[in-house]
Each structure stands twice: as structure tokens, then as C-alpha cells.
Amino acid sequence: MSTNHFKQVDVAIVGAGPIGIELAACLRRANVNYIHFDAHQIGYTLTWWPRNTHFFSTTERLAIAGVPLQNNHQQRITGEDYLAYLRGVVELFDLQVNTFERVTSVERLAGGFILTTQNQAGMRYISCSNVVLAIGDMEYPNLVGIPGEELPHVSHYFRDPHDYFRRRLLIVGGKNSAAETALRCWRAGAEVTISYRRAAFDDKRIKHWILPDLLAQIEAGTISFLPETVPVAITPTHVVLQPCEEGEIDVSAEPIIHETDHVLFHTGFHGDQSLLRMVGVELVGDNRVPVFDPDTMETNVPGVYLAGTVAAGVQQRYTLFIENCHEHAGKITQALTGRWPEALGNVPQRNVELDFSQIEAN
Figure (cartoon, rainbow, N blue to C red):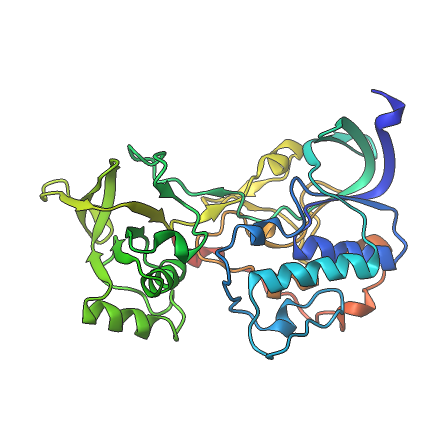
């Protein structure tokens, strides 16, 4: 192990999404000796959001580290707006984020940890007393696992409605993202069909201003809807859809051959929990929820903390978002320094435990 590639710090932050950046700002203000990594660019998840997609959260709930999030229209902002804001926060506090440097391993040693990282210049090693994993929960798409899912006209990422102008598009899914995508692509000139395994959309899973619009277009025939169907195979020219009942495939029913040019899955995403497992964090239940102290965000492994949506495990029904994770930065800062960061306002009066028993599958 070359000493030229060895660094010793008090805290290592892994992940530079909004909460990771917020924690870095808190630690910098508290004069904590820390180092910060991200395998990609800051706010990476937002970079593959569809263009011009608006947050459901309002600006005051998205603002981090006590820095107001202003805009010229006082309405909900887009992902592009928020990336610009995050860049501004990093510049304001001169936060040093080692972007495009992936943490490949975390090893427990007596009194601390050794992190191995990889960037384009090679490997290096970090010795630290504490590790904060702020790695999010959307690293990989939830694959369906059917023949043809790897074909080039099939995607789990919605990039831009323009891609589907005057093309036939099959959207698989029936929650908020699928509904919004269907409307945007239809208005951009696509011929849109939705395949959903349920008989009807759930008004608790689609925003109240989106669902009536979608239902109106389905009733008018401008967007096609194939309820109680699931794809079982994809070819270059068509998708084989199998009827189902209560979400379960009916193998006795005649399959539907649906001709289409593109297939877009909205089946959700999941995080990379390899570092959690590597360092010994206990993962509980079908949703692999990490064990942690809600007062400090410290896991069952002393010195390993969680910040942001990673704390919810594999979220099937989302319970953690940016807007309700800000206190994670405060709790971790307080645990490490003994003081709650002033920028985050008052110390929470109580902790609300998450009820994961109500989480439903996609």
C-alpha cells in the first residue's frame, strides 16, 4: 500500500446527492476533518431524470444547508434547476467532492475503517474513524426478467418525450411516473399504450392533478389502456402480453400480441447495498432495511452511519425522500460533534419510526 495513495481523516462520506452534500456542508461548518466521494457527478440520479421533470416537493422542502432555493416563478422546480442549485451550494461552501471516484470496499479495522477507492488515476486508500453512507436507493432499475428485455428499443429510463415523436410507445407500469410519462409522450406526438397488471389505477399512487388528465385521455381514446396485462416476451416488432387477475398471470388466457416501436418500463429502481453488506450492516426483511439508531443514524456497526434514502432499504412504496431526510445530516453532525448544526434549524422534538409493514411491491 503506497503512502502516496494513503490519507487519514475523521469522517468519510460516500455519496454526493442532496443529503450527502448537506451533511458535507454541516461538517465543514463544524470544522470536521472529512473526505467526500461519489462514483459519478454530484446529484447523479437527477442527471438521468427525464428532461424538464418537475419535483413534487416545493422549493423550501428541497433547500439544503440553510441556503434558500429561489426561482423566478415561485413554483415547483425541475431536475435541471435543482442540479444548478446543488452546484451553487458546493461552490458557496467550497465543498471538496471527489467525483468519479468509486468506493470499492470498506474494511473494518480496530478503531476505524479502511476505504479503497478507484478513479481514472488508479486506486487509493482512506483511513477513517467514521463512515457515512449516503448512497441513495436508485442505482439500478428493477428488471422484469423476460426474453427481449435487453433489446435496443427497450428501456427502463425515460429521457425525453421527443424520442417518441410519431412512434408507437408501450409503457409498462401504472403508478405516478408511468402516468406522467404517458401524458407527456402523447402530447409530444407519440402513439401511447399503457400495460398495467391491475384493473384500474390507484388514486393514492398517482398525483391528484395527473390522474384525472390521464383518465380523460383514456376515455377519449387518445391514450390506449390494457389493464390486467403483463409483458412476458419482447421481440423487435411486438410485445407478448399475458392477461392477469389480481396481478397474477392467467396462463390459461390467450396472449395478446401488441405491435410497438418502443417499450418503456416503469417498474422502479433499487440501490446498491454491497457496501452495507461488506461492512456488516444488518439488513432486515424482504425490503432489506438497514438496522440503525433513529436518534443518531448510526447502524449496528459502530462508526457507520446512514444519510438519506439508503436508510429505507429497498423502497417499494416510498417513505423517504429528500424533503424528510434533512434531519439525517443534523443527527449525524450532532452524533459526531455534540452539536446540532444551526443551519438546519431546531433539533427535532421526537423521532417518527418508519412503518415498513405497509410497504407494497410495485
